[in-house]
Amino acid sequence: MNMFRMSKRPFPIWLLLGLALGASGCVSARKQAAAAEPVAADATPVKRDKLFGSGDVQPQGNSALHYIDARLYELRDQDQSTLEALRLALQNDPDSSYLHGEMARNLAQGNQFEQAALEADKALQLDPGNPGLHLLRGKLLSVRQQSDAAVLEYEKCIKLKPDLEECYTMLAREHALQKRNDKAVSTVKRLLKVDPASTSGLYYLGTLYSADPTKTREAIQAFKDILDEDPDDLKAMASLAQIYLDKKMYPEALKVLLRIEHLAPHDIPIKLRIGLIYYEMKDFD
Image 1 (cartoon, rainbow, N blue to C red):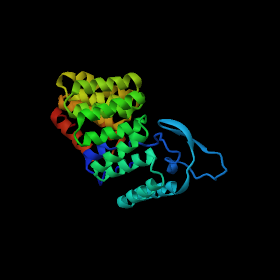
Image 2 (image 1 turned 90 degrees about the horizontal axis):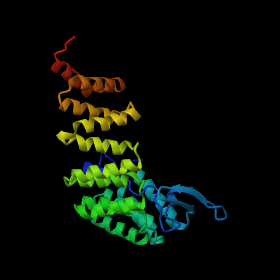
Image 3 (image 1 turned 180 degrees about the vertical axis):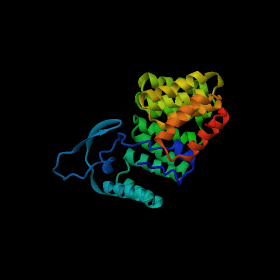
């Protein structure tokens, strides 16, 4: 579920403030109430796998109920009701790092970045070893144009969770936003050392290389590597076709676009591009 509704939020904010906490580990035993089915008082706690560790999840008291309300309100796009339900949950469980993190995320979703940062700080004070919270704080710092501080948070995230892909991609994005392309490429390569098959890593690498006129061959290879793993990846095909078009490599671009047309036969812009390529190639047959 995409918590940051693309149709209603400004694109840069949605891009930077994706779901950061997900199923992150937390201090309070009640902080993951909505992720678990209610259990009877005498039942064995439900064992859940979590992104940042595992443990027993046992919802308790009104905090769990208010959090469930908050999630339901969020599904209905009722932002103010979501925040109010989270405030009620925090009144019952003020030491829940998860609830403070969720409050921060929802405040950020509503562009209330100063308040979101305060909630993220509270969450980190309660659970300083949670990589998801460092990731969230990094995103908030980036939105507030505190790039150096954001970089530090992303590096902390990587140190705590070296296999968490989003830590690397957000760090690479931050470097790219600040025109530090060499550092962005280096960060993506760090990710690919951890996970050589990372589609996101290869896509970022190809995108970064495509912005450098001297790295066209490397950009093409990155997108080809993605297509070797998934021949039907439309995003990679579109990026590869764009590189070919920019370099006036029309036969290569046509081959890729025809493949896209086969997979998406009703895509009118693709048909127009194919027509333009035929025109450029003076092939009217």
